[in-house]
Image (cartoon, rainbow, N blue to C red):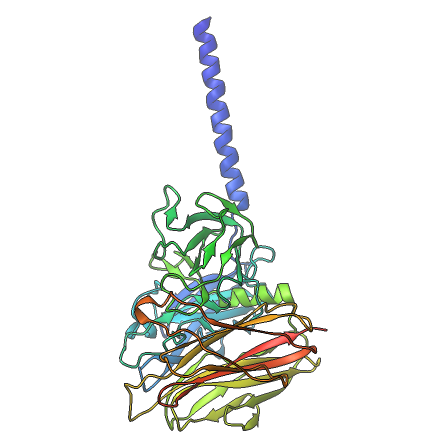
Length: 501
């Protein structure tokens, strides 16, 4: 009798255990998110039949790849990729602030080409063919609505950025002597130290924070540091948040976070180079090599920002430019996009006091330094937006000469009203001479500050120089800050501040 009862209890316990396992697996499968994009890799001349996430079939062929390199570091500055989609040809650009293009039944982008491997300082992509493509159905969202938000509580392009394989240039500028290029594979968002709040872009599980990791998680797409948080979402994608000034106590390994939940405050800790920013990147192993590769985040953060803030118009003058004195470059504002109507005007306002109309302009510089050229875009609904093209110019006759490089920021960047105090921050690299001079663009007196000299060996030490300003009237303000070094070379930077009614 006792043996029979014991046996029955054992069977019931096993049945409950099996039921529990079944429920866990079922819930896990139910919460699993399948990306809306599909990924493929092709060699030049190769054609492939591809099934989109909606079941549609398209034929994709890679026809050619043309890269444009600079004459200073031999770094890739532009990539033109020619493809055929269902026998219709199109040339698109790769990375560098380019969104997917619409063509027939698909939206398509090319986040990386093999040409970058020629002089990259590491492999961040896990690419085994000539190019990688991501494809979405026509008119599809890029990432499922309700599953992804902009990871910073901040205005779009409020400060400097790196994105989509752009060679790193913020802080010390590009080093002409270094020929192994750091093509930035994540999305860097500059901002205000200890002020701009970082939030989780997705629901997910914290697998690493403050250098602690969750048990059984020992394979990460990057290093583990005290300033870094890793979160895994229901796609199986790893999200990295780096250089945090502080991480909130609730964020620790094993904790499940909600989309939009606070993670910490923006900073310059770890391998930041000394400029304040969030390094945000997405990694997965959904590639032909099965190794960690970057899922280019620019299109996702763009879409999330547009959903949340409904900006109407976004001006894009990026990426930055690297030139010799006397060398001509092409400024291009055609990445700008109106979400409300049609763009009716592009105006470039140059540091030398001249202006030009039209999205594409040629420009050269006779003196080395760092310049910031203003792009003003207006659409048919009366929306206005500004962005800035950073131009770093080096003297052909003095290639070893450094130039001053500047990072400005401000806080808050959203919901500013007349009379609200706004904190402006700035740091200049490569010089101990001179002062930063602010012009707030509202007719008020200029303000002079001096940021601390940055030590290359300890660039996380020290604070940005701060000043507080309030705008008395609503409007768009283009704020300028500049500083000269010992040789009289200038660094000029701009910020776009919107003061609401």
